[in-house]
Amino acid sequence: MPTVQVRELRFADRGKGALKGMGTELLVGAAAGAVVGAGSDEGMAGRSGNALIGGIALGCLGAIVGLPAGAVSDHEECYLLVSPQRR
Image (spheres, rainbow, N blue to C red):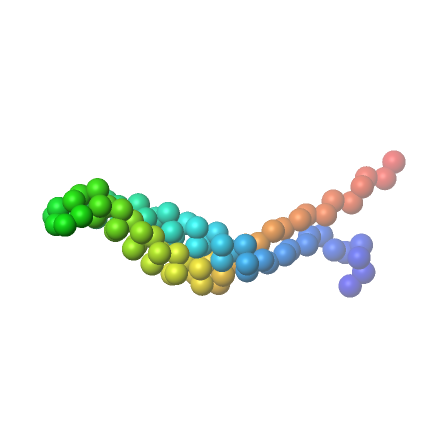
């Protein structure tokens, strides 16, 4: 294909996708764990301790699940090429 016919360039970066998925799911898991932990019985750690433990536990679980999920969906960058107008 001649380079004149190229209209766009696409780059798929699975590494960026994996990190994005891991970060997103870590935050979602940590927030959900904190809410669940704070709403549970006080027990030995108290409500704030349960919120901390729940946030850490579900945050780690979310990061583990989000890493491969983000890698599969990957991060895509698309560059559209515009030819200069002739005068």
